[in-house]
Image 1: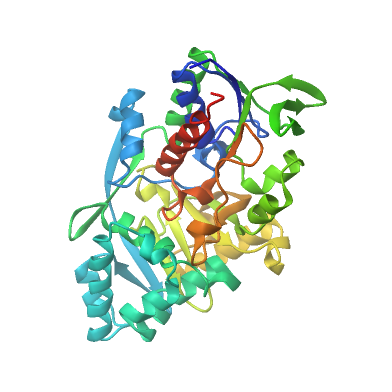
Image 2: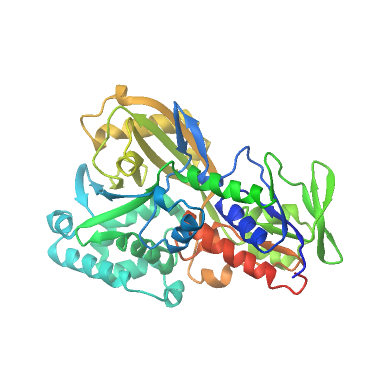
Length: 433
């Protein structure tokens, strides 16, 4: 196979993995990244003396592509597993959650509702083919299995606070794979177990970067491209800061919504398919606390006085002191709260914490921060498999994918690895390569 010069757009885990795969096959690779660091949503930042990820990540027992990459990069010894706990804050009370015992003790449902909920969880764990569920409505599917009351208690606010006006038009495959992934990450029926990397996701990103550089790849930070040059229907190069640079192919791992701006030569019908894919942004508040808010790694919330779907105490997974808590606001950019300042959102979260733990005091907060990302959660309505545009675009030598292509799986570094491999395989299947 003839060596080609290939440009990868985006230095998140998907872009880095795509570059690694291309370099292994003898191609010349340049990565262009708008940010000042690699990692995308898994990138870290300096937070009051700690290197913390902008957005929380965890590893599940079924993340086999990630385990394979860790082994390849000699990082398997950095993988740690923690027995984690889950909580559910419902109407002013924090309940234990995530085990049969917790379900039985929960007084928000009757016995029939509890039985139906448990039966649905067991059924979902065994689903192997999600295609039939792609065209089912998620909320209708859940209501059918667990009943209207159980849906209202356990799911309704989570859907509405994450998906807003889209909450009643989501694929059952999308929610089902999330239930299954967490349900299978257990060492027993009574114990959930989640993983993390010693050194955080940054440990993996640094190894991927080292591999790329040692194999002749180049990473250009703070270097978003102006456009992709297209001649006679094929990629001819890219333009960066007004300079034309020749290349044979471009593989974009940036949000696909950016692609039409960078490639104005795309056919109108293909652009319409891209524009049909919607996303929900996130504003993620991060707090450093003197002590844990609770014993839980993950706490779902259904309380009319609290405007977030949950909090994640990362330090209850990756044991550290002081404690680190993430609180995500998912909301469309049309939501009035999106225009609130970061400080306002931080203050709102801090105002909720005493509800979640009456012992909480404001002086527990040692540091605070808020990150925003416009393309945090792809909206996946029924029939989403057919909605996704092809990774192979109508422009010869131009390929694309983003987190929407993880569907129906959840957003994770594991899925970044898997989709990157598929994306590279698609690009290299062309006869020109």
